[in-house]
Amino acid sequence: MRRLWPVADPDPLSDEDIVAAYPTPDGQRLLRVNFVSSVDGAVTLEGRSAPLGGPGDRRVLGLLRVNCDAVLVAAGTVRVEGYSPLRTGEDRQRMRAERGRTPDPVLVLVTRRLGFDPADPRFTLAPQRPVIVTTEGTATRVGGRFAEVADVIGVGTEDVDLAAALDALAERGLVHVLCEGGPHLLGSLIDADLVDEICLTVAPKLVGPGPGRIVAGPPTAVRELSLAHILAAEDELFLRYTRA
Image (cartoon, rainbow, N blue to C red; front, side, top):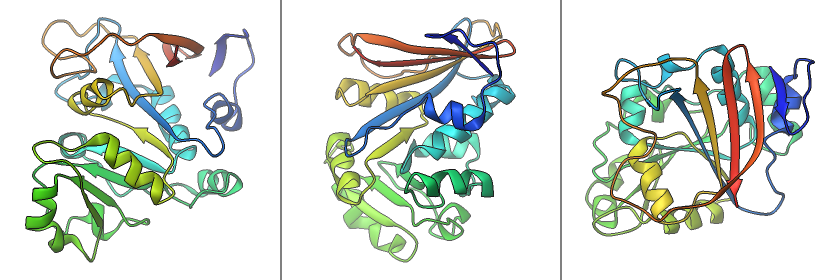
């Protein structure tokens, strides 16, 4: 992987270089979003996002997890993408430790209905106790079933109050949050004006009509962004945008 902008760099970037290209502000909250899209805007291939990305995308995803306290993900994405417990390899655990982080990030699951089984390995085998973010009503009705395997936060009535959820995570020391999807969750985060960064992998594929975009849901206000960098690995591009 090499840097195309802001400084052209023909030499390959190390893992440390890549992590440094995605800085996190000390003492300040950050919500970073990471998605992959085809050149023609598709967010999935054969129903999933994982087949869109190549080795470079998987490398960046893993290194973005090095630089976060928690991984925020919607229940549907967890199911469709087949998430496993968030375990980090030894080298990246060392990188996390050097940055004062726990060995593994915390999984934060966003769900209105909480239709999971408490015996799900994503809870029972998680190296860090997961957090479930749901509505107040769902937390009252079924949250107690998860008491042994996860912390349940109830915020919002009809929908999950994402701003309150991020406040609750920050109170737990989870201030640097990486959102990995899905499109409806991203749409809600944009609508609430909570997104600080968008990291987008552009996959060298033309998928054609059918798949949706990285954002779904009702229309939201336009948000201006600033391009922070462009990295490249083979034919994949990695764009990082921040608030304007």
